[in-house]
Length: 52
Image 1 (cartoon, one colour):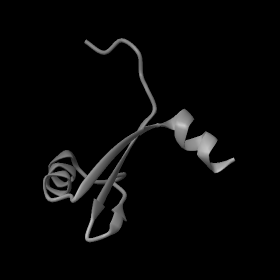
Image 2 (cartoon, rainbow, N blue to C red):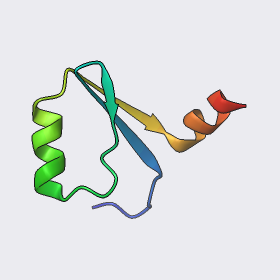
Image 3 (cartoon, rainbow, N blue to C red):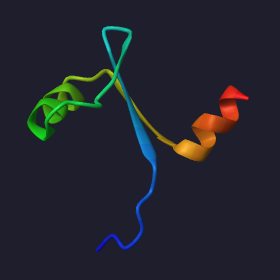
Image 4 (tube, rainbow, N blue to C red):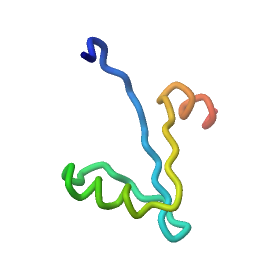
């Protein structure tokens, strides 16, 4: 199904705080996403260009 790997960053906001999903298990990440107030998907290229 997915033949190429993409570097995607998912930003999750809960209680006006940005939550890093890195290091969470799939089950923990799903719980955070389900209760999130906002979710934003960012391609790494977009994220890096914004920092320059």
